[in-house]
Image (spheres, rainbow, N blue to C red):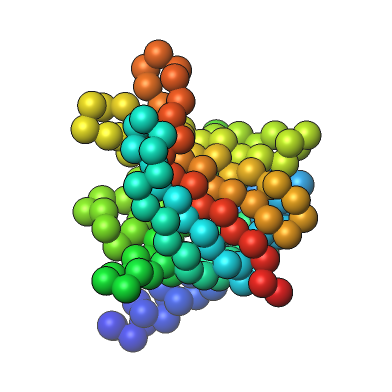
Length: 179
């Protein structure tokens, strides 16, 4: 009986994956093509700022960026280190065909909770912009922007985004392509 249930579950899962691969809403399309430009190995230069925009930390590291599921998901793994510590951050980006928004999910080794957000892509500036659930001690949310500076360089910017729509840059990850 247990083997029959397992067999039926595997058969159902195989059938579901086959349908999803044929269904156009699960296929990679125009909305995901922008992800491909980010793939590869990158050098990271991280700068952290306080709310008065004074530089309070600077770290370097490497990033590995890849796509999954035929380019539907963009995965970024950041490895940063100082003499005293190591820091790892994971970002996943996708396009949600139900809400017609780009979405992000992020977790890092210094946070106790993940954060996520929804946003848009501007084809003219080749930049993504997301408003996230993460917030500072005053309840101000964070905005994340992925912005191309040139073909082999982009920035991931995190802004403190107040209710009055004032933005203050608090984190800047500059990525330069290695390969």
